[in-house]
Length: 437
Image (cartoon, rainbow, N blue to C red):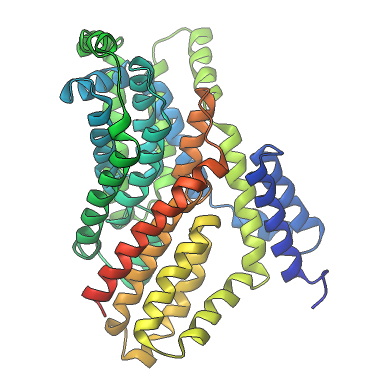
């Protein structure tokens, strides 16, 4: 096989992209776009195939929710929630780590991960600044618990939607099968986070007293805007839950529609110049660097898919397991974990779905292979915690941290994230073995 072979070239380009991301020698959005362009110039894929590979549902979801959160922020609602959360634990940073982690996990089960971190991270940054705490442990926890919470429901993570749609699994199927193991993982990780970071967190009585003196209701600077924002957010969340199942609307178009509605409500009745300024400021706060990073990454991963690299991995799973059902379930779990840590899990899951469906006759029919689907769900969703580019939520949290002057490095996250991810997969392996095998 020559180095000019498309399969080799696509793997080399992906390797170079990740090398630059890991070493932070170049802006991640720029290197992802350069990699995407190279796949076209070198003839690995056509322009049409590359553009078609961009998951505009994810892109629209990101843009829409960024705009909604930007407008909501002006109402003071994040300060309100931050003060209320601080009061629950008497402004104890150790308690806040637990409370914010649990809120993140619950929200992620019923919203998507991206929406959840966009709502929670601004609150976290406000609280850590007031309590003079480094936000790193809190942000790492929110990355983990957003991906963990999203694993438990049909709408919590994009791979779940793909699998549920292909196999006919319902919202309750996911909750019943994934709920128990997710509860165990949440408890285990809360204990680990408390041991590594929480027990060392201290802050002055003055800082705690200063935060507790705030009246949460005084933080609400624009109540009419708050009501408009909550109304639109409720519509968007309802759309996430019901829109896809009843009408086939994707989360991206729902989020973008919500953003448009809130822009109209926010600027209604204003003079032309002021109206235009508000809209422009909203667009300025969209994390365009993150958007273009995702677009580039989708195109680079598409080259791997186009050349058959992902299909080779899927085919090798069958070859390695030699038809043993128990081994197949565990190999799917661990393979999807490793790939999802470093490659966007959506194309990998999309590739593996028909492969698993093809295993049904050999294992006794569609019902008999249900454990394989749960192995794929756990591996694909929890594997996203393995690196800073493993899931969309990770990249969003990193972007917020960068803007706040508290950057999270790829290597720094990998050092903590990968071992913690392995713990969650070990728990998942035991669960799959005991319950399904």
